[in-house]
Image 1 (tube, one colour):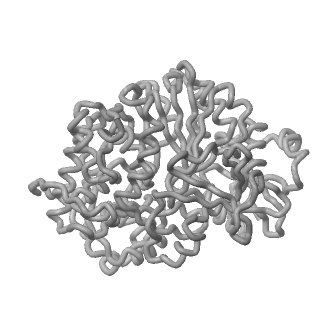
Image 2 (cartoon, helix red, strand yellow):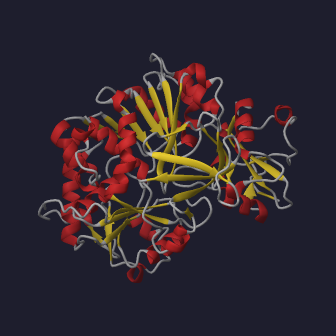
Image 3 (cartoon, helix red, strand yellow):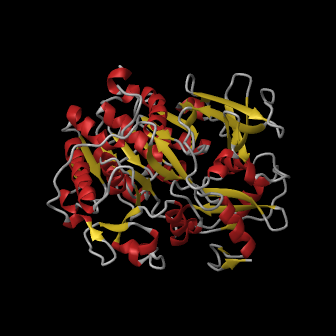
Length: 532
């Protein structure tokens, strides 16, 4: 069956929609926002319509001068057309570079320098906003403008209506096919080079896992369009012919009415968005009632969130499927939770390494493997590992231990081979065994918490940074009761949820948060002024 679905040991983004349309052309795709460059196409499309959009965009990129093997950075406002432009670039043999809309102009400046004068697809709002202080003429080969508003800095793609369609260009499967970036939780993002082969090796286990939902369930995706995970999810469900909802805005007030109308059977988003969606469990119209499968990756998910989401489903035997992985390697381990098992789950458990695809070990400071149950630095072997960090190959190789890749996470494997996370290496605090474990306990104890992050204060004391739903007041008595058996910590800093520095996948940037704490630039909810 898989040989029919994935006949080549390579995943070509440029023909993803074309191949899906050939088999399931009339399958519906619903958007929450129209395509920025082609708003006239509306929000209700099909596989065939999207294949035509990709083909059209590819023709326009070629007409603008883009050629095979050239890098083309895509950095524009959040919209599904980010992924479609990337697929269009791949269709003519170029190498798409997807850069998050959330990245600052300063970081974009650095990444464009590493890309060595790529083409840049952006929009007028970005040029006038985040990119206003950049010398785009010297940083890029040429600027192409997405959307419908012209800008004198570049060529408007929407204006190239007469561009002739072209046959797809296939590069060798071992050549660069996609460049994405790391989350940037520890500083400036690194550029990761993927090939059609490495992407395939990530896709295959996910295709197997998703077999039960083939064509049977409507799938809602609300994820970062610049992350490789989004392209894998597209690959899985387009191959299976599932109807899709592709969503930009994760706000529960936006998501609830959409789910009430489309009634998806599988939903996938970032773990921190699922925390926000807990409030949909009791929302009017029961927007989560139709969900049979919740899917998440990027990071471990809090047990409280799993329980609430599964409890909101009215489907028989709902499941939460969790994959743990890293941008550099793809999925590493996986597990699933039922309403019963969710009540007893350990939030630090991220399941079994994917059999036949992944090997994981924990090693000591000397690089030698430690015994089962003993904590160490986690390392992985994966055929889906990226080729390098563009412009930082030495940094990439510094994380290799022979054929093993150092993940940057501390954890252990129990006697059964299940993988448990403790903390990121860089986030460890001497007086606490696991920040993440304490955060899980606090989230489960205090329903009003939307986020809690424990970081090291300027004097080395652990400082809990907390956010509540709707920034409601924190009950100090309930807090003191929740932390009474925990290691000593400072009083909590109650911060507006919108102020937390986040990555494109909604992870909290702990290093930046620690820096803001040291600088005294964190606002508190009560004062709305800097906390010092």
